[in-house]
Image (tube, rainbow, N blue to C red; front, top):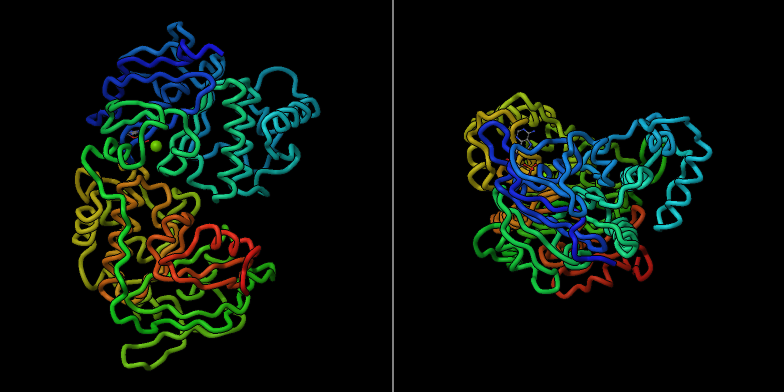
Length: 507
Ligand SMILES: Nc1ncnc2c1ncn2[C@@H]1O[C@H](COP(=O)(O)OP(=O)(O)O)[C@@H](O)[C@H]1O
Ligand SMILES: [Mg+2]
């Protein structure tokens, strides 16, 4: 295959939004038969650059050529006719329609759903997808919806595919499946661009990396000739330490004791089945499990947000006295110093008002959770300023409306607020979802500082590598049951992975 002429050649691309220079004279080559990882911190201009290929934005300056010919891309339709398709971070599917209906939506000509279904099946067979053309979108998991988006793009004949943070919403198993499909497409001669913050994914999948920093092109190189450390340094612009610390817990004492906890969802399905464990002060208890194994229900039960069928959850004071949390309302539990921070799969689904500024959004969220801890202890403005400083949130000020911040920065503010305020027990789920590597390490550092101050941290994460480095102990959930509790130090990824799927569990 001809790998010499780039499928896409972008030269001197500049794009500004008012005073923000999102892309600054960027150049980029994309080749067929290659998977390119486009890297950069949150807000470095990756999405903007790719949106100019997919016809969402039009560059202020610069040229784009496809297969050596200069082109003008004024709309997504123009992009499709050039074979460019983009899978966005936020899906654009119609919930009440089926997969097939969504895929053919907007196409010209006679609508033949039967023929469409056949073509969809052929695409699925060719690359190893699983899509039921007749399934309604509202019945699908996030991963299935993403598959529909990809098939939709292929159906329109795309051979240059751009995926914007596709794995941010996937479990490790779903990610593996997606990567197998992407490799098939690469081997089939398609050009693939993937945006991701996960270094091990970059190393496992991509052939080449290109790095943006503050809207500028910093460099590109074959993935084999670089490593996570070098890529991170290039993204951030200075040397970054990539080790997660695991200080030995100082004087750990039982803080939360859970016994025989059983929870059913509204359909009556058992989500937690006789779960028992102790969380200690000054310790990070990591919760591992494939998505939907009961992680959410566990944290919500402790926070008082989940009806419990059986069992007990005791809060243990410094003097050893115990208090049952089940039956207490979320506000009382929060006032005892138990705080919950939960980043949903779709991180834009968080309760935010775009037109309100950072400070006001902080207040809003604490009220939504039924809490007033922050509002009476310190002003939301002081808190917002602390979080912005600690987490290096890029915003002109805390009075900037949230809608002007990039998604990653908004998330830092929300997660940071919970962490910064955690007094006794910190329940946190998916804290670094969608965050760039530097911000993620800032969060790990903050969590470790909480631990050093004696907070009992219960950390639900989807990155097993991180759990193995960060957690003092790892509790593995499988189908709502505890399949084991292992020390973080010395735990093997493979063993924990098997416990997650019950293959090698000891429970
Ligand atoms: N529609 C927009 N209006 C105003 N500013 C924007 C818009 N889209 C992106 N930006 C800004 O441009 C910069 C680059 O954003 P983006 O391309 O989304 O970064 P990345 O995808 O690398 O996280 C950020 O400062 C962001 O706030
Ligand atoms: Mg982006």
